[in-house]
Image (cartoon, rainbow, N blue to C red; front, side):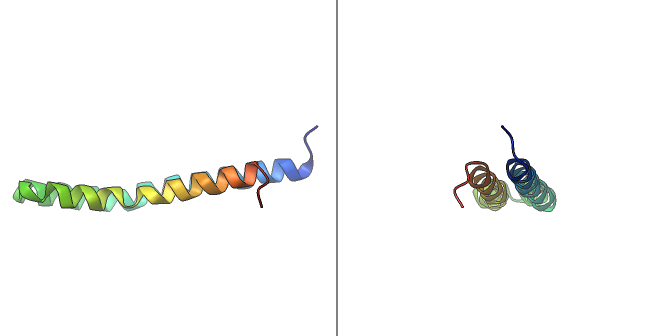
Length: 75
């Protein structure tokens, strides 16, 4: 039987995951545009630009882990 607490935890988990995904998209928006400009001028900087593009991916990972923690009642 689904209780009110379970429903609230499900909503909280979905907000945590969605927040992480939206934050990642907003961060990569500027980094991707600037990175393409850098690569167009200096192709040898590809590895450095790729590294900076991947850093915001940690936001969705943190949101996903927090969502799983909430859904599994770990806290």
